[in-house]
Image 1 (cartoon, rainbow, N blue to C red):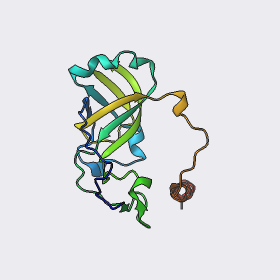
Image 2: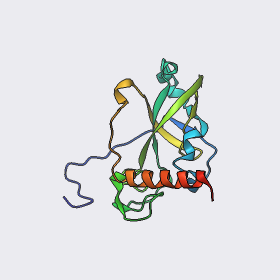
Image 3: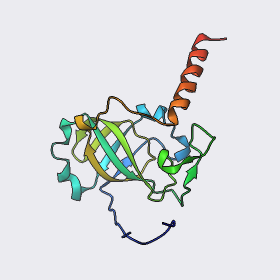
Length: 167
């Protein structure tokens, strides 16, 4: 089926349930490894606050959000940490996707009314939050494959070892 084909497709309308507050103001500031320790908040809009009932019992949450600044997409892309070769967009975390949505797992630090204080934010300030789901035991996988990222991880570890040994 050709790209852009409308056969079997229907429009989907998503309504933000809240907004992320993050120290990042520019997408270029976000580094995939350093953002693991980034703290921020998820503010849920008043009309959705009741949906937070019982969320405090979970240590981690999936945050589904919109790449609201992303324009257009490419099916082949060069990932941030590995410039060559180009990869399929669905094998990357590129913001330039046919549907500009993202998923991040964050650690829930505390809930204060409609505000969730979290750790692990990798989104810019004022990013629209589309949904929240609890991270559960069934989500945890002990054996996974990481595809082309394995090469990158291996070379990063070698570099860390060399840098740790010093000159």
